[in-house]
Length: 416
Ligand SMILES: *Cc1c(COP(=O)(O)O)cnc(C)c1O
Image (cartoon, rainbow, N blue to C red):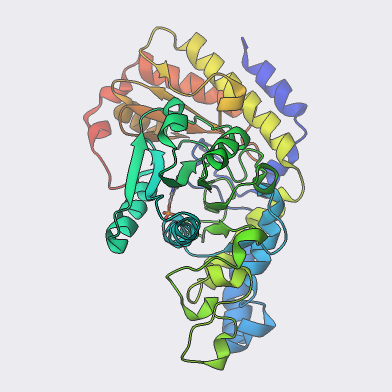
């Protein structure tokens, strides 16, 4: 692409273009960080007002029934299900990815142990999001039964690492740093051929790329709602367990919301028959209610259309960075091949942190991930082709003028 008008023309022809109006976007920034925190749906402010003033303020305690609060984790789970190829009553929205992983890994280890007690290994990738690895480490230590976390350094090592000692392969579908995407169907098949269970983390997949959990026959999945699903900062995550595993799903966080009859106040824990057993305790209703505003936008389109635009956006971004910023030491770390690419594009730069701070100061918001990675997320519901053009222009200016050398851009905040 050689000029901005071509980007404008792509936006005019974009079938998803009108959906941008359903988001409350800031006017002076180009937001390329929806893979970390999505922007507010326009409906969210009104919804928050209703939940706080009417449901909480007027309805008070009655709203657990009258406003459907108690049922919300399941109702939202059912609304989210089609986006990830899940069936009705297989998903609940609850807790965080980290907490849900603890539940899933515990339940999966139990199931694996019943099938074959010799299987003591959880396989994952060293480049996985650290919290996933920390949770596995914590659980292994807690169980103290000789379980082991085996980490590979490259996806190509997975087939050899998953063996007859493996209980679970815990794989994140799209890597948070590089944007590398696994072939979920092929890898699930391989994991099953080796006799292990396939647990998928969809943090950077749900709402970003098509996912078909039942189609590929996966065993467990988690994901969050605050990234591509635009649920809001710290909005609850989701957990998926297919019907075939639900009865055998025993999780250690056996709180009252997972009980089959919580208001019987029975001293004995008896898990709910279905998805309810994934729950633990009282959920944050104000935050959870807003998740629905994000999901409602997805109902107006489909994941194939989103995927098509996502690839067009990341293709254009990669092309423009490599042509217009060719003289600078930027190295693409995201796969070029479409089947291996999620919805963000990452470049390494030796002074990546400073460059990103300089970009943010000029209104182009991406983020930085150690080591040296500039990460740019493309969320097709509200990102335009012209945003891609303008962002690369700004990147070029920051690099040509070396504005990133200003001392204030080297200071690190608690969150990068
Ligand atoms: C964002 C992300 C998380 C976040 O976990 P929380 O417990 O919800 O904070 C976990 N895993 C992956 C792969 C992520 O990308």
